Image (cartoon, rainbow, N blue to C red; front, side, top):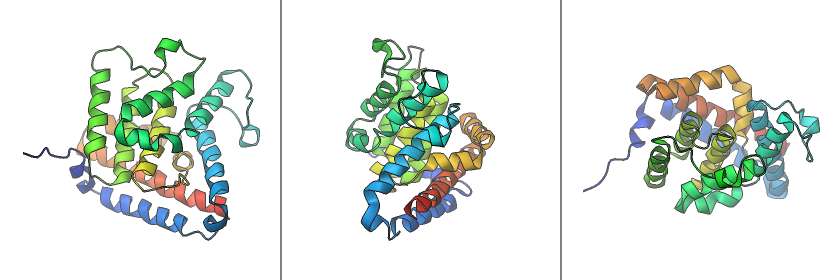
Length: 246
């Protein structure tokens, strides 16, 4: 007896398959950039920094791009910036861990993000509220087994972590970094070159929040709204990465 893939049907929601195809086409265009033959490492490093900066901006940090370099000022913005940079630095290293143990990868992202900012026994540990650990485990089981498109899986992981807030701190930074881990592990962005966080900034914080609220509502329309929005952020992130190549 086979178990139904709960994510497989999401690609059939209105507009989702087309949005995923557009994001994959944008990624394919990025991977064909001639500069990557000579400067792949440099582009990857630049993408990591831009990813961290944009994620920090989305989390409320007031740090200009020109000043985005450690050591950061020890204030709220500086701590967010440092956390985002630490999380972004783990993306490539966590791909193999994600494939076999997603919960371990999420714990690592939270630990590097919040080390020194929360008690040591809270690092990487889900909130104690009823249902949090169970929902997180279900997410890990589903994304490990699914054959759904990578962009879709990344979108589900992103939104589930944003709405569940499993750790109670840095959940948004963890969610965005985990989404990038999925894109790498699923072969959408094998070298971690794209910058979907810049896509989120371009689409706007209000639209980002509205799409997450729609996902949390659980309706088919709401799920489609989030998944198409997320795919659009990946598409724009790939376009931004092409500017790094040039």
